[in-house]
Length: 241
Image 1 (cartoon, rainbow, N blue to C red):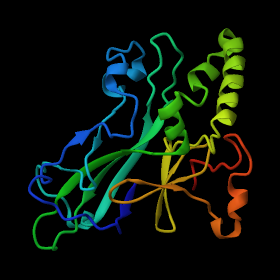
Image 2 (image 1 turned 90 degrees about the vertical axis):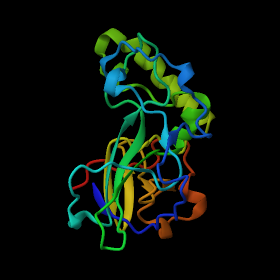
Image 3 (image 1 turned 180 degrees about the horizontal axis):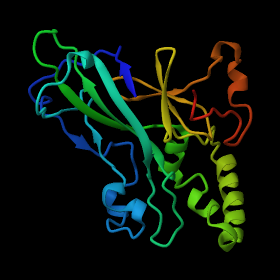
Image 4 (image 1 turned 135 degrees about the vertical axis):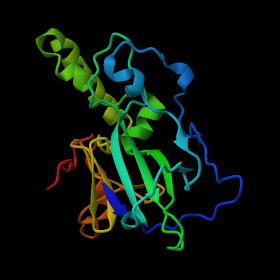
């Protein structure tokens, strides 16, 4: 998705010019806790989760071969996709759609309009309520791999559904949406979508999470927003037309 950016880019100093990436301080699960050579094809090689995020709001300047078209100046390409915060055990069911959302973007700086267009890369976890609870307490939703395993995993599935429902209630999970499926630019807002919960609003170009978005927020009393417990009190399609 390409969105026109309205968020100003912070002024850079010499130390920031090159950019860097690291595991953010609020991410409690570390790479040392995971198995690098995972046997599942969707948790190995290029599919292995990315744990680092670009440092600061400016991202990392990209090396450009050729010339970026002027029509892209001031815009941003952004994608989202599953990025497992808690990598499952080697023999655990897993599906390509499993995992918390992570945004990756390339921002084409507006500059002064005279020099060549410069591009900067940035990435961010979608810090949904699901992400925060999974970061603190482990996985919060049933794996699609388990759901699609069929009769072979019937009882593990039933027990899993019960267990994650209990976790959702115990840890007051507000919504199971994690923004890992699609993006929509609606009312000058970039929304990360997933079928199981509310849209997650994010800032551009930094891709920082703003919070859950309610389409009719002004008509919803504050006390009513999270009145229901559990992850399914409000959902939104991840495939809008």
